[in-house]
Length: 221
Image 1 (spheres, rainbow, N blue to C red):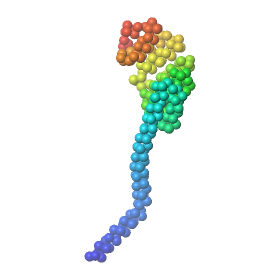
Image 2 (cartoon, one colour):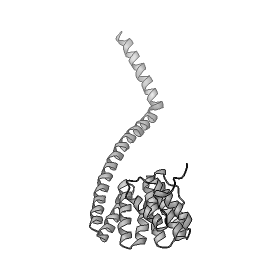
Image 3 (cartoon, one colour):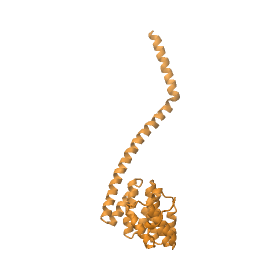
Image 4 (cartoon, helix red, strand yellow):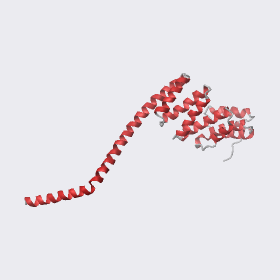
């Protein structure tokens, strides 16, 4: 009986050796891929967490600099965000904040570059739309009306349409198209929540053009 089991075991071992000779290399590579993918996933998770923490710290530095109106400190913090964590959401928010501070400091070219960073790299369509909105405003203020028109020709999320209409009104007014500007401002005013403070600014623009939006009939859908 013992010899019978020995022969059976030897046969199983021979079959196993034959199987491994045929498929062992493929199995080894499969394990390498699976284990490598597992390690890469956890490595990616760790990298993302580290990037998020680093980005949060850099954004906080930029926000503090912005509150202090320290333009050079803002510029340094924004440069660090671009260099170290450019793919993060914090970098997009930092770019918008840096653009505002730089524009207020009459450094329009640098502000444009920060806004273009969001437009080129942003994955959040709302943030990209905000960047386009501000960029169009800079171009209008600089008298670059054709550039502003190109910026406003881009598609916009539905929620941003009232602000888009307001900016389009600014452009149309600068182009001397007063009637079209009134229509754009009315569209903006009607699309904004009455609780929004910005709606009062749009209303003031309409008043300057001789329009009282509260007395205007609502457009039919």
